[in-house]
Length: 207
Image (cartoon, rainbow, N blue to C red; front, side, top):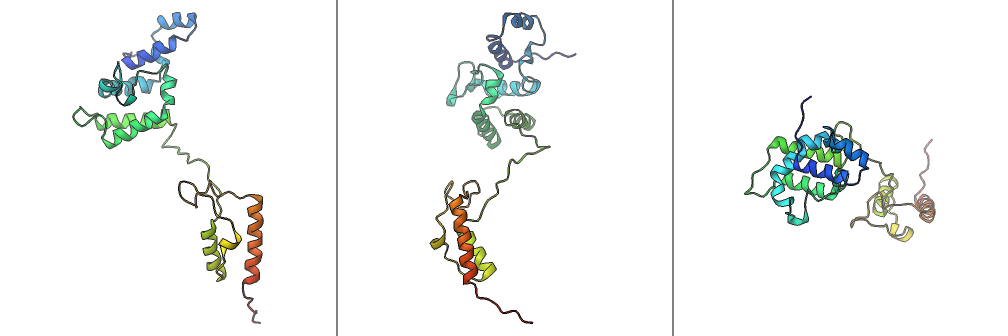
């Protein structure tokens, strides 16, 4: 089995993990070639070398530009929990903002490896099996409801007089998670439906 030389970052994370381990575990790790398994193989073999080559001059070993230091974490798990940090890394690397323009840049393959690790290990995204999350069952807001009634019934319903203003989110009033339906609002919709039906002209059926 071919051994992989631990990087500075993986060794740092291992030592941080060992600080909190029982004595028996420390002795086992001390004499075991599997000690570097405290971090995932993907991180140890592919990601850590990229970070050390292109990021360590500014973000490790005493350097903390932008208040970012990749070797300032108590464990590999703590490193993974910094999702805001890794999202910023992903955006900056994709945009070519990091490393700085005058510094050596990672290859396209190295960028791809870093992106894939961030997606899978940090955010638990699997491109082969995407999970879009739950789908919100949303209602129509007042404007949509008015337009729908006009299209279906030919009746210009005054929603402002019958229905309360819609809640807004992020400056918009058509966000599904914000458009909730309370029992009182449901009653108003029922009353609005009765008003609409009563106001629509009846059409005599031709026999």
